[in-house]
Image 1 (cartoon, rainbow, N blue to C red):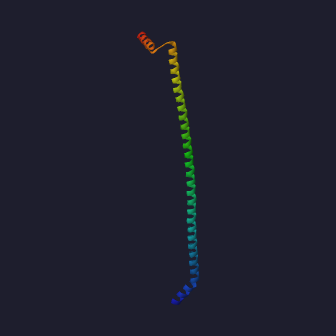
Image 2: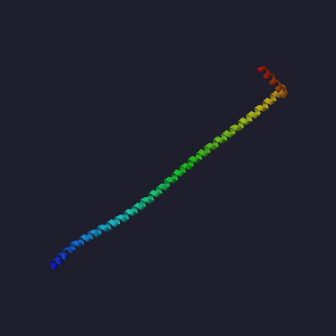
Length: 125
């Protein structure tokens, strides 16, 4: 029985070698596939990161452009308002000057003006 065992074992060696070889080739192919998968994942991650950086840069550029537009719009509005205010102040100053000249031409002085005010106040009561 001991001899038959060894003879049967010797007969099964080629089959065992074939099975071991197949398993080895399968494991080696799986290892290579895993290495390729990791490399692809790294490449995809790098591409995705580059895309995200590009999109962030583009978004930041748009934000800066919008902020610059707002700033120039507000600046223009303030300049126009300042010019309008200056025009109003000049118009009031000219009007005051014109009125003073008219009062002087009509002979109305401060004393006469104050007296006229007092008379109007008495009449209103």
